[in-house]
Length: 159
Ligand SMILES: CC(C)(COP(=O)(O)OP(=O)(O)OC[C@H]1O[C@@H](n2cnc3c(N)ncnc32)[C@H](O)[C@@H]1OP(=O)(O)O)[C@@H](O)C(=O)NCCC(=O)NCCS
Image (cartoon, rainbow, N blue to C red; front, side, top):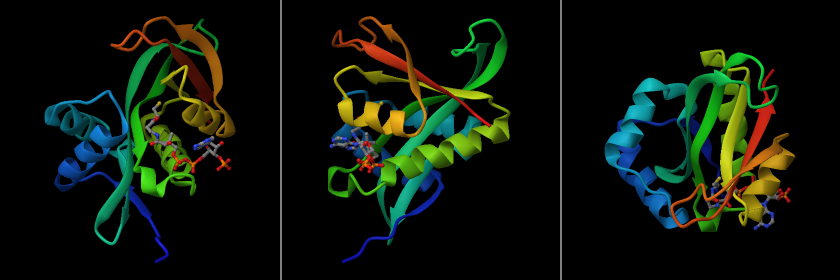
């Protein structure tokens, strides 16, 4: 059957499903409070993909103030993609790109001028998705992950 996902803001009733997708897809897992806190502080950038009452993926972000990841010389508001995942059975159909694109647009609600994220250096799928979406590798964060793997920090200027 053809699946048509609708992208919408996370609601607290989605918590169980989002936590389950997170656990299936990523080694970085969080407490329920962590998800709810990001939803309460930045509701526009916590987005889920739903089809017929079932979730296929999510993206959650926060907005931070700090030195620009791109110019490093000025203070700015930056969107930070904290976590994104699409269930294996729904991958490679454009859902991940749609989730990030919608989150980038929503970051403008909070006056963010750029977006950054960390991604495992071995995560070629995600790195190529981010490159397709206009992100560039800024630097390597050594031993960023709990298991010792390095991360690329990637960033993109927003409109
Ligand atoms: C990364 C992830 C979110 C991508 O989701 P997705 O819905 O499959 O992504 P899309 O279909 O939008 O793919 C966009 C692009 O990413 C790249 N890509 C995605 N999956 C890929 C794969 N298996 N092999 C190579 N490139 C891949 C391609 O460039 C693809 O564009 P194309 O299909 O036109 O070639 C998904 O693989 C995932 O949930 N992975 C596990 C969690 C994770 O790694 N999150 C990112 C942490 S930073």
